[in-house]
Structure formats: structure tokens, C-alpha cells
Length: 79
Image (cartoon, rainbow, N blue to C red; front, side):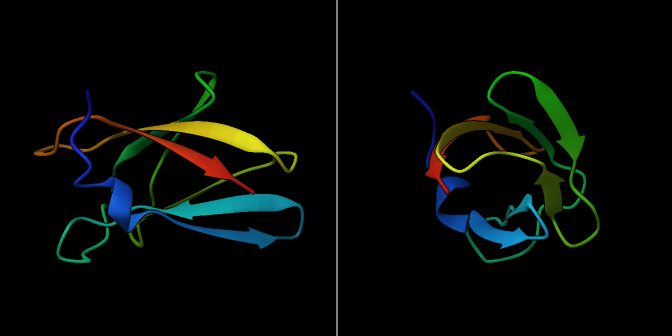
């Protein structure tokens, strides 16, 4: 069971064949430095704007979001 505090703050954008995820906390502040893992494989560190990007195909994907001071959270996204 994961706390949904981070889930509500995920946004998804598509640009130039990449999917860009932005992680925010419950107050809407970006989670700079958060570790975001896509489908259990590739891990990226969020930039100062809380953003990471992955080259992915459209479909269903799982994100694992880990940020200092927050419980780890899994989020399912469909792009």
C-alpha cells in the first residue's frame, strides 16, 4: 500500500517522442531530486523543476517515485 500524497502531483507531457513526467508534493511544490523509475527498469533523477523524461511507447506504464521526506509511491500512467 502506497500513500497517494505524490500521486496527485504527477503530470504527463509528450514532446519530441519522449514522455515528460513532473512530480509535485501535496502543496504543488516540485520534487526536485526525486528518483523516478519507469517500468522497473530505467531510473532518472528529477531536475530542478521536478521533471524527468523517458523515450517510451504509448501505452500503460508504472512509475516508482522516491523522494526524501515522502513515502515511496507507485503510479500507473497511460500515455
